[in-house]
Length: 379
Ligand SMILES: Cc1ncc(COP(=O)(O)O)c(C=O)c1O
Image 1 (spheres, rainbow, N blue to C red):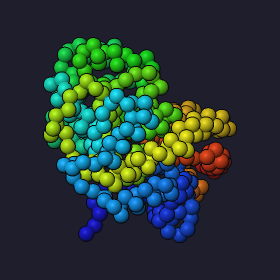
Image 2: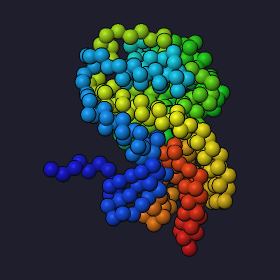
Image 3: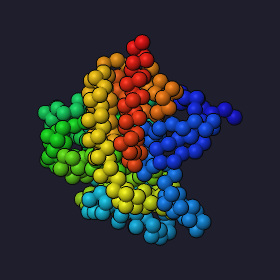
Image 4: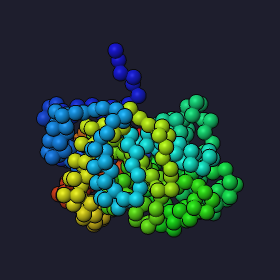
C-alpha cells in the first residue's frame, strides 16, 4: 500500500533526537528551531518525560472514559495552577482541531446560536467546524461549507461590533498569536474590546492557544499579555511534547451534562502521564523564564542582520520577515546549514518555534547561518 501523498517532503530521515538536536539516518545532526510545527515544548526525548511514559506503559496505557482516572484529575489540577486558570474546567481530547471543534460546539450548545466570527489569515485545523472557521478556501471542502462564518480583519473592533449587533453570532474565535498565517496578532485594545463585546452580546469568546499556548509566547497563554479572561481556551501542540493531546479550558459559566462532549482516546492514562510530565518539566526547569531570556537575546542578536524587515510574534513563537520570498533561504538553512525553521502563509516569513529549552548559543548558531546564507544567495 502507498501512502496518500499529501505532504511535500524534505529528503531527511530523522532516527534520533535529544533536546534541540535531531540526528538523521546518516548521523548528520540538525538544530531544531521548529519543534515539528511547535509541538516539542520540553525538548526531544526529555529523560523525565520518557521515564514517566515508559513507567505508565508498564502499568496501564488506556481504558475508556467510563472509569475513574485519577491521572486526569492530577493533570487538570497541575494545568490549572501552572496556567493561572484554576477556575476553568478541563475537557481532554487528542489534537488541536478536535479542541477547536469541541470549543465551537460547546459555544453553540451554550447560547443556541451558530454564526461564527473568525479572522483573516486564521488557521484553526482541518476538521468540520475548525476548517470552516479557517481562512483558507483551498482546504475547505464543499461538505464543510454549510457553516456560516464571517471573516474580519484583525484589530478592527468597530467591524466586530457591527456583526455582533445583528444578534445571530454564537462565537468569536481568535488565535492568541496567528501561527500558520504568519505571526500577526491582535492588539491589547482589540482583545479587551472583544472580551467586552462578547459579554455584552452573549457571544462566546474562544481563544485558540493551540500553538501560542503552553509558555511559547513568554506567558503560559498568549492572551495573558492582554489581561483578558476568555470563555474557552483551546490547547494542543506543546501539551504532550509529541504525544497527541488536546484540550479545552472551560469557564465556570458553562454547565456540563453527561454526554455533552466525548471522545474515545482523549485523556488516556498514557496521555495524562505525558501531559503531567510536560507540566512538571516546564515548572521545574523554569522554561517560561528561559523563553523570555532567549527572546530578549534573539531581539538583540537579530540586529546583526539588516536584511530583516521585522520580527513578529513573541517569546519563542517568532516570525522573521524579509522583503522577499524565503523559500530558497529556508531550504538552504535546512539542507546546507542543518537548521530546521518553518514557513507560513506569508511567504516572506521564516517561522522560528524552537523547543522552550533552547539556549542562547543556538541563537548565535542561527544568526551565523542566516548571515552566511543571505550572502551566498546574493552572490
Ligand atoms: C492555532 C492552531 N489551531 C489549530 C491547529 C490544528 O491543530 P492539529 O493539527 O493538532 O489538529 C493548529 C495547527 O497548526 C494551529 O496552529
